[in-house]
Image (cartoon, rainbow, N blue to C red; front, side):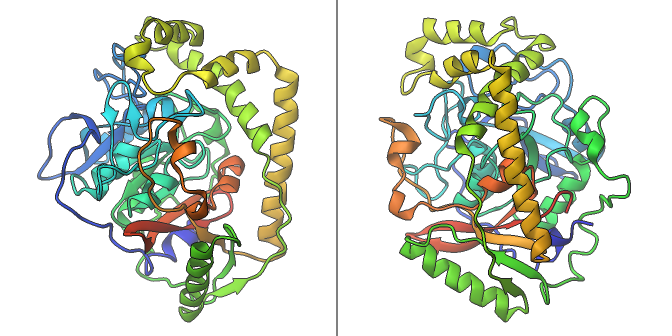
Length: 428
């Protein structure tokens, strides 16, 4: 059962705290409960009779008919839905020049330590609601980095589960092969308990069929009984040319070994299939979105209708960046042959990743989650704003392979948090 989640509880640190300023992290707040666990939900997840906007004015009238599968699970598990969190519009999948944390529906979510800095995304509001102290736990979603990056950048714990452990029904999609929801909170223990509530089989999400029948979903039960003594970790080299990353990786190696872990140096010759992944996301986005819209109250039922709305309302919807990804997705959705070829490329890299776990008998791969926060930049977006000399990360292979990825706060540089990642095998 969930070994690499509970063996790390001894290392997890509480999130940084500060006086809370809503600063557009929430788009709707329903209040708190004195008796239940208060939780905030990313606004691409359906809550009955509430707007599900994906951060876009194009969906401001999209009132959810029913609760998403995981929302009902949370309610049944005595969680109180405290509000909805802002996100990067369309989960950062509208333009290559998007600004994390900004949406036309909710405005700009800012870093909890400095309003001039970006909180990363796309689960920006979920992370800031926790790091600011409004709630101890939130739900985010990830396709590639959208839980891990804002968790790392805002100094909280984040967990991207194995794809298929958590139902995606009632969540506005990007990719049927990579999407998952996951918990983001102040501690490994609370994240694990929240995962218990939302994990499990959903007959209407075929990805959950693959959950092993004997998988123990009581993820938090052994957290205080275990250690990292004797566990075998491969230390991922985020960027050997980055002096800051080198220093952190050396310190991470020392700390893990001093706690009894075995650090295994692996021969890692994988090449990241970025082009293939990007095409798969573009292809799956249109098909998945239109499937969601077909069952939603929103009157616009196609990606093309949303593109037209954005064009007609450019001043309010697209003041900083366009919709080039949307346009590319229209074209990509027609090329099924290239889609299948791209999936084959990704599956080969996933196979190589799993073979590394087996070859070196690894409990997890460990690395720096993401570089520190960067200043908000509306001219060129994140891609122009990020300082490449301080940019590093470890989560891409976990994302394309559907593997579980735990991020915990660990380091600090330039006064901003930097998390570390533990990536495991499927269902671990």
